[in-house]
Length: 330
Image (cartoon, rainbow, N blue to C red):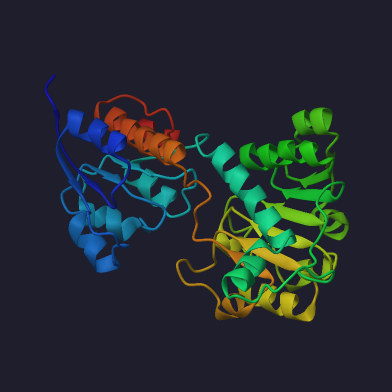
């Protein structure tokens, strides 16, 4: 089968099956093999003359990048479920398709949210460091007391695919589930007895608050000084969604003041930069944006992004098209 006579650029190495799909169908495939995030200058240079781009969420693809690529750019296939790193409006105005990889990382992300929940509540990271440092000299009744999980109340902020999957796992721990979302989720209400409440009520009544909202202007700094004041002093905050949903400076202050018991974060306001105050606190667990980091999940993301790109360049409608209105501009 003849390869498509297109020129594409992949901004980082992705799992091999994804690259194999691209190389099987497209004549020119260039991959950034350096294990670092491209600078703005590097990105602008590398995209020139490309018909398709396969970026990760670490690359900000705005109108300037699209114009640097040239008018022949047809598709941007994001290797992520979110697409806040891409200016979709600018892409649509230029007749460029944008795709994402929804669904495949739901279970992995939900699992990681629970891993963070357990780690912060039971002080796993603190006690591991303590033990490795040779400080453990015998059991003590007051050593690393944490928070109970079974029978407590879990608050889900954003009850879409991932939020609902996190909620479903709560049944195994006999937890009460509250959720807030613009759209009701009858499934978790019927199956889990989950209750839809306001954001403020959820913060007041939850022992654990797990965040699963996309990043929009309306969710930027959704968690701020006012939000933290509403939470229980014994509550824990878990975020596997997007970093800017939380005002990190306000979170640091709230943790220092004891407005909540702890926080576990996988995403950050200015990734990869992390607020220095968070790094200094013991009642915080920090992971480097790895919620979807399982071999199976990342491979599925790679093959989905690759197939989206191939389909778009082949004249087919990609399965995961974010801006379908662009097809009317062709």
